[in-house]
Amino acid sequence: MSEVVVVTTSYNALAEVYEWLISDAKLAPAEFAASFDDVLSLLPSNAHVLDCSCGTGQLAVGLAGLGMQVVATDASEAMVRRTAELSEEFRAPVRTVRADWQELPDHFDDDTFDMVFCVGNSLHHAVGARGRVAALESMSRLLRRGGRLVLTSRTWELVRARGSRLDISDRLVRRNGRNAVVVYRWEIASHWEEEHHIEIAVAQVDAAGSVLVRSELLSCWPYRYDELAAELHQVGLRTERSTYNPEAENYMVVASKV
Image 1 (cartoon, one colour):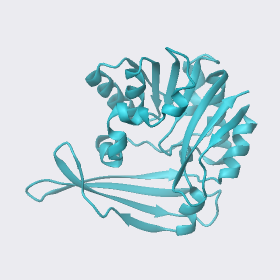
Image 2: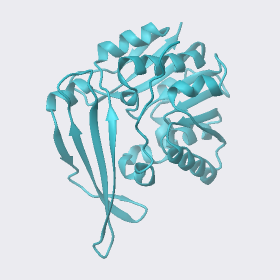
Image 3: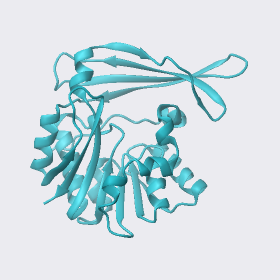
Image 4: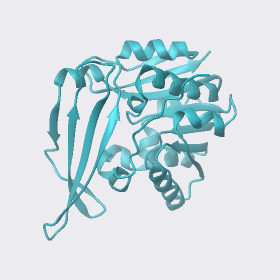
């Protein structure tokens, strides 16, 4: 029997302030979905789409607004709740399910979806190479033959090269009538395969000057681009497109099920 690798990151504390971590361009559901127009043009009408690691639901709601049949999943109960609330606010039908990657086959039949999204730099929360392959295998199983996985990632080669550090935003982010400063604290381990940590803090400042801080320490296991490409191939996915650039902060990979 294969060993089950459990992801320890929850995001339950950050879920309440997650909008401060989303860029202006991705805050509106329609605009976030539009950023994937190139890959969405490959879909049939009324496509079945899964947004796993859905966060607070901007992409899922944006896709549903385009007429797609959308399911949104996340390992965090709080994130799933917020996605359901956003779906109701926009009157966009999205089915929400709390599930981590390895639980996906317990909820959905194989060959169910035309496209699976795994965006927002989420895959690094899978525990090491074994957990990452298990997550990718679950996503691959749910795709129909010819269906596509759309995945975005940090360029971890750059992150590790910069070492442990404190990144403090140089501007206030305004959401819901409140300003906040966002702080990232990076704990970079000595070796790639070791557990790394990112602590994210959102310090909200009101008009009277009082500060409310919400923070969470997140575990992550980084990977090289070449490792990801090999693991996609291992689970039956063929890379069709990649924006990987060793000098860029993030990249997108589109891989089809063969």
